Every structure is written in structure tokens, then in C-alpha cells.
Length: 367
Image (cartoon, rainbow, N blue to C red; front, top):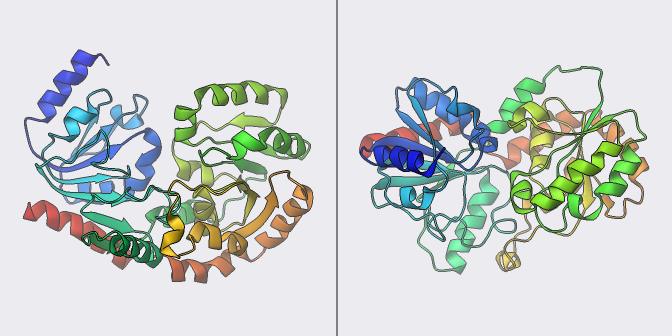
């Protein structure tokens, strides 16, 4: 799309007030909105979905009561002027940099695209300017309230929302048995992730096994480290059983794999609590976007859960083969063991989800 076409589209969008606006940085984030969007559409709510991904499938086919708009170069201009009852995002740092709050938006709601804690992998100021956070579990509420207290911030609204993607993955995974063994390597995007420190050695060891090996990069890794990712795609040509994952929907991928290898990515929680299978962790350095996270004196859930939901090996991959065997042994009865842990940690229930849906509906009616 040309700049002129985008300008015309944005100008048209700004002429009227929207009921609810969703913004997605790329096509990969739609699964985190999907359930809420479907239910709002059934309620007759008019949805405006803004995407910055030209390959977003919603640009070609969307739901009833839903208009999809591609905006990339004029986002800053659009954000500061858009009119809406509610704006829902899974993008952090609202109002901190280019993307400013609009005085014509009634309420800004944040939805998580990972079930990790809020204070280690996110910047300290990441959620400061949202009106409401839809929390995955009580641990996130505790972290946010502690951050507000330590930094003398006003309390924002916190909803016990849960993580609907867990349940969607569980539904699609139930009873699946293709007979094909697939290993997914899916690191996070920070400096020091698997792709940066041990991918070559990992592939050398895994390629001798009777598995199909799939590499899934984080969208931010591809965006921030294009040269490195281009090199990885070139290097894997040496392995007949290694491919790059091109599925935009993480739910679709997680329901097709038998084993997950990751580092500090929130995908570990989705695989363990959604697909009901243990995770093989590579003990890379911590992903510490907030250098002051220890001030909260709260251990991040993504750190404390590693021993509960899988096995770990060091970056030098010493003991990888025994760890793979241990992982297979853990798989027996794993789903039953994590069910209670899931119930304890997360707000997942129809009741909590419906409260979140009703909250959005009330904000639309009120505004």
C-alpha cells in the first residue's frame, strides 16, 4: 500500500468514532484476541481491527461486524487522534514512545500475549498508561500492585481474565496422535537466546534423531535481527529434517508438535498448560528487560515453574540426550499433574472470561 493510500484510509477512519478497536503489530497476535473478538461480534459490536502486517489474513477475510485496516507508516498520527469507546492491545509501552494515548478513547485495555510475570521480561513502565489490565493470574495482579506501590503510581483496574489460549490449545490437542514425531525449537528474541548461543550445536545433536525439527522464530527476532535470521535459514539447508515454521497462528503449531525446546519464552507455559506436555529448557541467561525487577522481591513465574513443567540443560548442551529421555518419561501422566497447578495459578474459567467480556461491553455502552 502506498503512503497516499494509507493516508486516505487513516483520514477516513478518523472521521468517525469506533466502538472497539483492536491493534495488532503483526498477524501473529490475532490468536490472543480471537475469542474476545468472536464474542463481541456475536453481541453485534462493530469491531475495528488495525494491523501493521501486510500479510495479515484478516485483510482478505474477516468476521461480520468487523472492518480490518492496514496501517504502518501513519500509526503515530493515528494513535494520538483515533476516537473509540475502547481500544484493546497486546502492545506494551502505550504513551511512552511514539504511540500516544488519544483523548478521544474512553478506555485502554491490555491483553497479554504471554503468561509470564510482568516485572522481569517487560520494561518497568510497560503498563503504566493503560486503564485496565486483563490479568492471567493472581501473580500478575500482585506484581502490578507492588510496582504501583513502589513507584507511587495510581492504581489501575485489574481484571481476573485468565489466558483463553490455554483452553483453545487443550481442545485442539486432545486425542491427537499423528504418528509423526515433531520437535519445535522456539526461543524468545532477547540477546543470548538459543538462536544466538547454541543453535548450531543443538541442530547437530538433534538431526541424528528420527524427528522432524521445526524452528519457530519470535516476530521480534526476525524484525530486530534480520541478518542473523537470514543466515539461520541458509544454514539449515544442510539438514534434511529441519524446516522453518511459517504458521502465523501459534495455536495451530502447538497442536502439531510432540516436544518443545525453548529458553525463556512464554511459549513454554502455553505448551505445558495448553498441550499438557513437558518442556526441554536451555538454561540461557535470563531475559531481563527490566534491570530493577528484583526490587519487587517476587520470583517471576517463568523462572519458578521451570522445574515443575520440564527439564533443563546448560547452554553447552551437556546431557542433552539423557534430558530428552527424561522428557519422554515425564510425559506419562504429565497432563494430569499440571491440571491442578493450572487451576491454582491461572484465572482460567468461563466465569472470569465472561466478566472480561462484560467489562468491555459495559465500557462501550458507558462511553
